[in-house]
Amino acid sequence: MTRYFLWRLLQGVFVVWAAYTLTFVVLFALPSDPVSIMLGPNNLYTPEDFAIRRHELGLDRSVPVQYFISLGHLFQGDLGRSVQSGQPVSDMIAEALPQTAAMAGLGLLLGALFGVGLALATSLTRWRWLRQVLLTLPPAGVAVPGFLIGLLLLHWFSFQWNLFPALGNEGWRSLVLPAATISIQPAAVIAQILARSLDNELRQNYVDTARAKGAGPVRVNVRHALRNAALPTLTIAGLLVGGLLAGAIVAEVVFSRNGLGQISQTAVSSQDLPVVQGVVLLGSAIFVVINLLVDLLYPLLDPRITQVRRQPRSQPVTVSL
Image 1 (cartoon, rainbow, N blue to C red):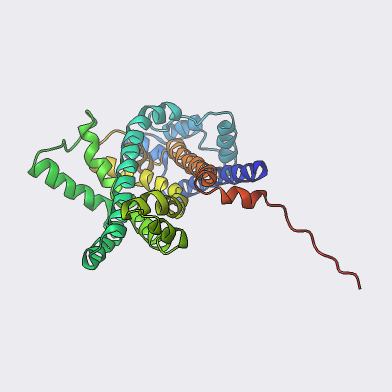
Image 2: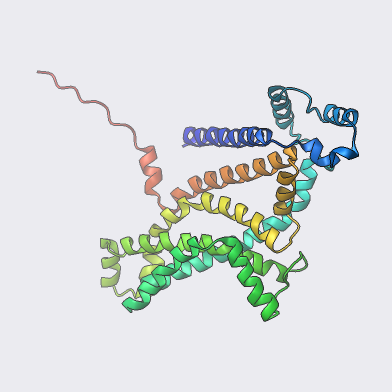
């Protein structure tokens, strides 16, 4: 188990490094230049000003040299400074992260509640037509773009009914609409996978045994089948968190919230490489940590996984004639 965990940790380090490197290459391949964006139109600065600013930022060096310098600073825990503002990237992320984390956490909670509730409702209903209607909701939730959901929620709950604020970061009420926006797709994925897993588990022999002992439908679904059916859903937890981070960027732009989304949008448009790399590094690190936690939670839900890992390999059998 320890060797497996170390191997997974090594894979996670590789994923973080690959994301960091890919971001560096993509941003340097863009035709524009961060110094030109920062200084403005060509008539506002001289070529000498341009050259001095590039030298101060280290952009006059070759791309490989810049990459290894930034990678060396990363190993020292230094994410660098913003090209546009000069502020330390770690401070910018630390200032914006609580707002995004609160929205993403609430979105994940709402997505889990909606998804599990819809899957259980699908498995418990006795009307076939209602079951078919419920089964069509998850694909529709996956197909609808997140920004369109946000705009619809803004129109209904802010402008038409005036129940929640449309913009800003003030109070818990400002979290509801953006969190609901990013929760739709995770809820749809959870409901779709969990409904199929519950349908398979309800056909197993242990479910027939529980029913024979007098367990009702709710007890059979929640107490017996749900635990085993949750394993495939838990597998995609890392992907759901990654999707929430991507959805948070869109939601913060739609709802004008100050967070990682606004920072990412500004950094990409201004080609602010240290800021973009810092945000990507944070997202990939969260993705890796979530997947490691999922691996550790597997044995708690199904002890057979631990038993299979501990089972010694069978020795070859030699037959003498």
